Image (cartoon, rainbow, N blue to C red; front, top):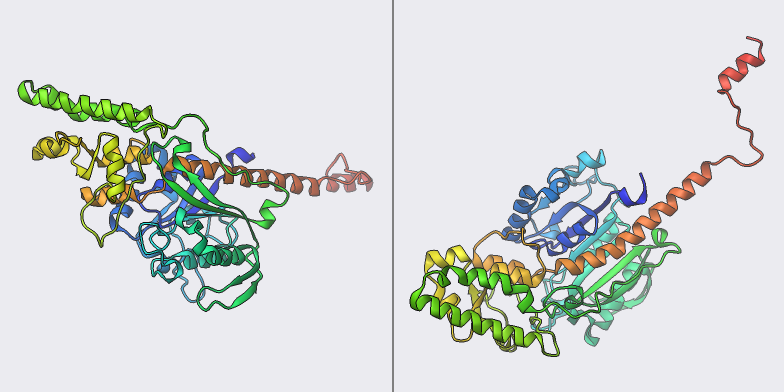
Length: 433
């Protein structure tokens, strides 16, 4: 087995509807477990893995854990011998052991650090960085990838970031719970990068900055270098280019009706094309504002606060809600609401998924609002893929380096003489047998 076909394993917490999982899968990682508390998102993961041929490996060997990550126990121990992963046992020929996992990843909840929230950080009950660090210590994977909103890089969270880095690689930092300064020994990792990636540089037609931390175990990294992905420097993909075909598909049934309905549909479609294509020629390339998934504590799905809705309006789209799919629109006769508004059509869940970078064959479970929240809260798969490929490159190079070292250690020294015949036959001939 060479480095290119060596199986790279991963576990992802806070997996949501699979944005990060898809990207890491495309980068070559095989998931041993995907952990997600939201029942609709967990169902989305289950149904896609069950139905998509590209996910046949995960169908056999991946646990979908629909539970609070605080209750997730990936390794069995004396207190809970029944704990641990189930399906992966078939692939691993036994339970997962500490230091065996290649990558622990997670898009920990963003509200504690989001500019759209109160930015309570460590004081927010939804902060799952502590649990992530516990899992790093428990699993001791070769690499760690943590995704969050850009807000975590704000100056007000500098001490908290320093604490997380010190926990991983060692150093002086203040404990968040009491502010006491401490010299941490670390968990044997090197924080290779903690920076913001802009989704539009990776082919996603959306302004979606995300902060990503990558840490690699020091014994794995050695003298290797982790190369941070920078994305494509070419022109970003516009909303017009991303949605043109799907918009035409949505209006098609009404264009075929003839009469006033066809006239209204053509007028609205032409208006959208004019506004969206015109926006694509502007300085920002006509990309979308950041999709906002919202939370269960708030009302129905829409495309974000007033400023975001205004930005969508410049793209010819109404941000006041989410439209029904093509079939549901015809069934519920919601075309006036969904397609013929003076301010432009509303997006469907499927179109929001395109804006987020999901592949076309990835389907979402639950009602329309639950589906939209899954899409809006996701990590764009193309960005996750780029980071995953950068991590995989280091892990494969480390595997190849270690395999060479093993082979070299078993090579005979120059002064050693290797008999041409087996020792037993040499002995028999020497004895005259």
